[in-house]
Length: 205
Image (cartoon, rainbow, N blue to C red; front, top):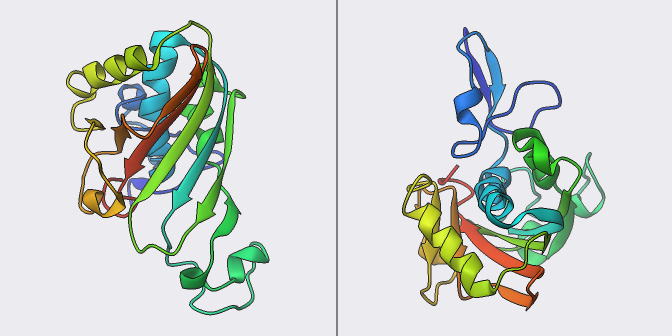
């Protein structure tokens, strides 16, 4: 192959996320990473928040549907003991490099985000829970408005916005990388917020 796109985070290949840093791509790069489905959900959202309000630090949890590497019944797992348990019968805590990968496509956030995953017994669609401490004070309404504005502007078709009472299956076949759920998030204060964004992990990426 003359050109290779790795559909997972890479330790050494240049990483690009559409809507975040794809304009930095150069034609002479033959092997590139498009990060992961979770990074593609998290990065556009994190970029908007950091650009508008500044992120001091944050933790991410993805509630993630079953994938092909998981087991039908309990069995051995090369990666981790919990990963070998029956996929359709358990909530399985798991590691993910998605949050750290954001630091590669958004260097300003390098070392400021990390996260983990819960694999759950659903076939498709996952959701990111991003909890961040902000540099600038902002109401939840102001945060919503900033995301909505970007979803209708530069990030249209990449970052979505909804105020409907949605559930996971409403996003099956949605080609957007990340759909912010305005009703699901919550603010503890003007500097500490939880943001929720959906993604079809098999289609939106």
